[in-house]
Length: 134
Image (cartoon, rainbow, N blue to C red):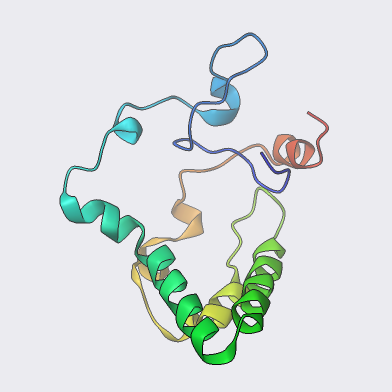
C-alpha cells in the first residue's frame, strides 16, 4: 500500500502481524462490501468514469498521437498527488480542473460535505502512518 494513503473502512480487510484483521486501522468488516452487484447496471455505473476516460484517451491517441494521452495521464497523476494533511479532506481542485469537472455540479458537490464525513481519525496516528513511522 502506498504511503500517501490511509486505509479506510470498506477497502478490504487489513491483516495484522498475528494474521487477524487489524480493526483499529481498517475498521469493522462488512458483508455488504463483499457482495456481488445486485443489478446489471450497477457495475457499469461504478466504472462509468473509468470507461469514459479510456474512451477519451483512445480518441485523443487516434487524433493527436501517442504523446497526448501520456502527457494528460502524467498531469492527472501529478494533480492527484497534491493533497492536504492525511486527516483533512482534500478537494483535488487541480484534478477537477484538468478533467473539466469544475464547471459542473454533481452529487458529490451537494452531499459530500467533509464535516459530515464518517471518516475521522486521530491526526497524529494518521500522519505517523503516512510517514512510515508505524
